[in-house]
Image 1 (spheres, rainbow, N blue to C red):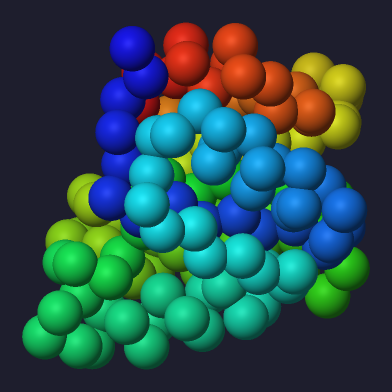
Image 2 (cartoon, one colour):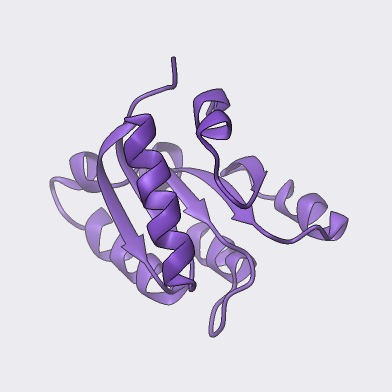
Length: 134
């Protein structure tokens, strides 16, 4: 049985990947709410704005599926900005790197961020969702 999340966020500049991942997450029935962002900049702004709200605990995502290779702000730049958020936000949001990168340096680099709990290769599969332990 997969862990159930209150809210999940997808961050990927590829809208098709976001749609596929959203459908996979819905099919696995691990959450009731999915936020989708096609850019890391809008996602980090969303998180900054939400953490100022009294209802932040209810609105912040439990899991963030983050692509690495994106224009304007890539996944690692997002992680650098994420590290600047408040501790409650960082504690609540577990990050899953979801990428097509097969570069071992990306995997090693992701390990430097305590908020990154898992590194998965695309595409997201039903099996990988059910095996997630974050």
